[in-house]
Length: 556
Image (cartoon, rainbow, N blue to C red; front, side, top):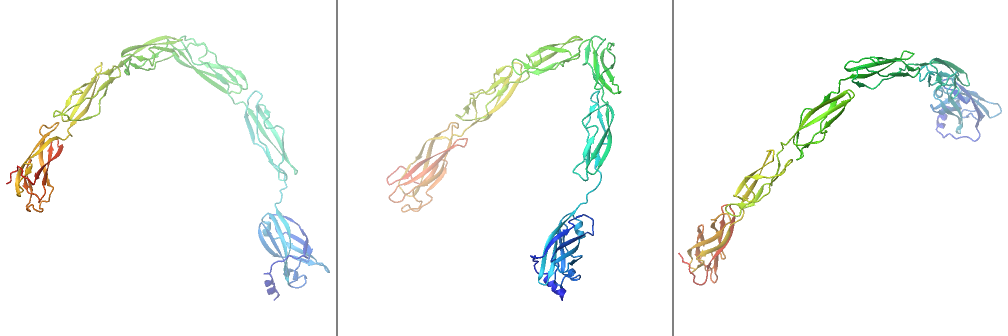
């Protein structure tokens, strides 16, 4: 029953007491991974009384510890403890959870006292889990060996790195008997170094080797071109360490060289056996050799001819001069270019030709295709402008098979034109002239006979229409009746109710009925169409009247 009641009481809120307190806790730090560690808590009224007075058995049932930190939260029973008789002074023995000793960090310890009135939270106090320091001499880091090329007879300034690691201090103090950046002589130098910290020191040494691996620099003359086969020259060499050294060349200075080009090879050795090399060419010549272009043909670009560029070279570093010079304007025809190459070995001359030709015909400028309206049966007179220009001759006359201002017939005519320059280059071109008839005939007059019908006896009367018309192109335009209309209904009041009232009997003839409605004139309108042979049409009208008085028509 006591344990059941304790289970219910654990649900209550932990209430810190104003009387109980922890006076000390220790130890307050532990090394990580060193397990089964213990601590002791001293304080006042630390034990719970849920199971009775804090005797040697009840304290284990009524008192627990809560540990919290980076490894997590852990609840543990106390390992032991006691209360000093006749006091409230308590001592608790604590077993530090091994789980917290895996993870370094800051941890809290809180005492939980289970009382019959509730739980009390006392504390917390704290401990740290730390890494165990390593107790040993510092580590010294030195190069295995250092190699450097000598920069002078004194050796070379050599740089290197020496470092160290301390296990007790931020860094050890490094001292070497030869420093990085010092001037080291040629050969081997042993460098001794020491790393020192508050625990101890470490020493070591390494070798710095300064060697002469550089070759002498051989200076030879520029290539020599001469007409004298006996050639003298000067070659020298200098070494960074040894200074000037002897140079040997083959062939040697003062030797007799064969005609043509010979390579002279030179070598120099320093005291360490390092070799330097150099070479140059000696050319013995009887005179420069000209390289001329083949004969050049160029197209004229103007009446002055054409600008022509060319390339002429020569051996022996000769100076080349040509007349006329490259890029000059050459006249039409053939011009000889004379060239001379001058060198220390002699002078050579040569020539080639430049021929400027005109094979380009004039450029024709012709009108676009022309369309004109016919002005008569023969067509139309059409004027145009055709010109030509030649690169060499300038403006040239143009000849066309149909002259400007000629009369062109109806339809399309192709005009062929040519222009020829003074070098018989001919240009050809053409354009078309189309003459068309789009003007309709002109109707001069239209008459009807008879033009008045009497009496209105409902009889058909033959009417003939006469048309006088003219056309610019067609001397005989044709006319015909295309329609007849009336201002009255075909069958109206008083007209006899006869039909039809008109008949077209020929191109210009018709039968028209002599009738009308009572009290009014009937007017027939005859529409005529006149057409030329191009299909252009004109229209006109003439009237025939059935009146209220006598006319001259004959009825039938």
